[in-house]
Amino acid sequence: MWHTKMHDHDHQAVPSDPTLRVKALESLLVEKGLVDPAALDVLVDTFEHKVGPRNGARVVARAWVDPAYKQRLLADAPSAIAELGYTSGQGEHMLVVENSPKVHNLVVCTLCSCYPWPVLGLPPVWYKSAAYRSRAVIDPRGVLREFDTQVDEDVEVRVWDSTAELRYIVLPERPAGAENLNEEELAALVTRDAMVGVSRVPPLGEKA
Amino acid sequence: MNGIHDMGGLQDMGPVQHEKEEPVFHAAWEGRVYGISSALRAIGKWNLDTWRHQIELLPPADYLQMTYYERWLKINEQLLVKHGLVTPRELATGTPDPGSAKAVPALTAAVAARRLGRRIPSSHDPEVTPNFKAGERVRARNTNPTGHTRLPRYARGKAGTIVRDHGVYTFPDTNAHFQGEKRQHVYSVSFSARELWGEDASPRDSVHLDLWDDYLEHA
Image (tube, rainbow over the protein chains, first blue to last red):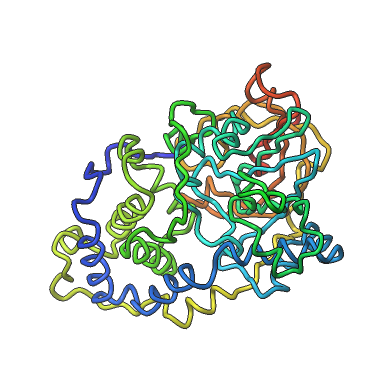
């Protein structure tokens, strides 16, 4: 039996000025030798400039043009993703789930904000929001409609709730009209939202 | 703990607000809080499960009102005090207490850069035997632990099918409270939407959860 105390937290909900409060905290932690500000710079720079959904888009495009790569990706995503130079910062295991004419996959974390950082970067606000986390499991088709994504009744919607240390990436269907595009041009079509499963990669000539 | 963080199935949270061209961080302080969280966890006084549970302990009204990184800021402050790394006075003044010891940062820039390129450790462990195998029918236990758990309320008591054995992982329910890693198999378990939500749900749809051995029983 756990002994969680409901009364041991204070109730200062919203910081009056988070900028000042964080500055004060960082300077205290640096002075006490607990934090190296250069390490914070590396982390911020990494997620602002280096790691983001463009990584995932290149993985998807490679899977579209190279059937052997796609098989490796579906069988062992971390290794296949590492082939393109993207490695985990979190020690998490990644899984790729494939959309098809019969199955539409949707990823959520109902308990917090689990998300495949190495290929998609840090999650957007909507992914972490109460609205998305609460309804993605009970009303996935309604949530999809809010992203203008219609899924036919005869298609299975398969929701992946990231409750453990596995992280999910959706492999969207290659859009119609993209047969002649090369890998780089294909990667430019792939959006973060399509890799979370809230949208598709639209046929060429249609606006996303 | 049956807290507000366990949101799956709530229906009164409004439409999803989708921001176009969203920045990674909406203000510079969010990035600093992100970095501080990683740097402090590297010290090793708490683990990711402890950290998640601290967020769950925020009062529900605060949890809903705070932005994501406001929660992170708050719970890092709480963990620093709880684990004796910072005194309440230091937090209030922003200055080290006279005579306080000076540590050496666990996370340097070089370590941070190296970690981002780290390969994933294997979840393969032949020493730990699985209780279930792919294809078996299971039921998520009807349980209401008051500590940290990764078994959402909406799945408890529901029957599903093991789709895949993911290998062996640390058990968050004990690890969050420093009661051991209790490593065990984690499975992808498929639940039909109708099993979870009743006859109004689509007959085709399903929800997959990743569940530890201790969360499951034979159905």
